[in-house]
Image 1 (cartoon, helix red, strand yellow):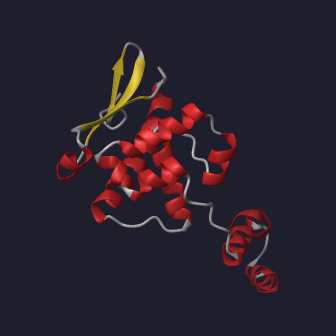
Image 2: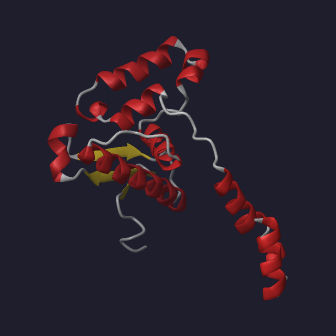
Length: 172
């Protein structure tokens, strides 16, 4: 087992935990030195996958806190909000779904997360807690690219250059 495999991971009582220092410039704002989280698994491979997701979400969150930027309606921002909700141990739901499906105790958990200092001030945290970001609608250009690159990819591998260009012109 090398150091890269266990980066930000520690095994305690047969359960892997994610432990990462918060960047110096954010510690005062966030009110802590470490992000610590149990990954709830004894399997290293599963822990590594969870660690990678959490580390990516941490990086995005810390960048957003530094920039004080808004949470726009892009698919990237939507995915960041979902990842942030996971690190907060919440299932991301849009505001209307929260109103329809959440119990009073679940609503109180979300409110308490917002009342906390430091991290709760970040717009991405607020969006994750209250479900203020709807999933962006797919653009037609994205749908066509997906169709060409993923769905039609297997058909295109069987074509020569002339056939490929003909299909590309006809279908796109």
